[in-house]
Length: 85
Image (tube, rainbow, N blue to C red; front, side, top):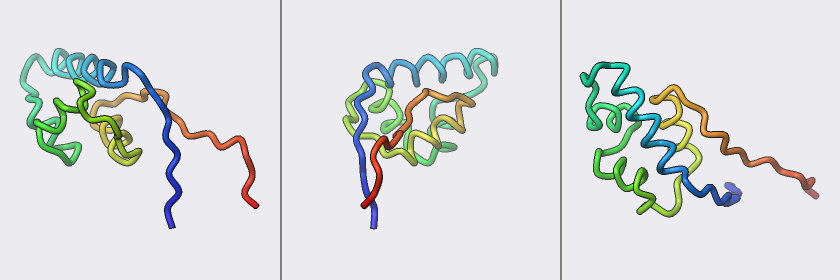
């Protein structure tokens, strides 16, 4: 069984874009969005939808894969303050 908790994170798309551009700059332009997106397990079209925040719900697994590919941590956590019962 899965339990899903939504966390609102305004500006996440812009942070992802900034991290991607930084990675591309460090690679001296030899790293395409297509390569980055493929490494994250998605198409470049989906990647751009995430950056522009056209994608409204981003699964945690996808976010973690993006963080891994970009070598970044965007600080999104799902801290549970309650207890199960």
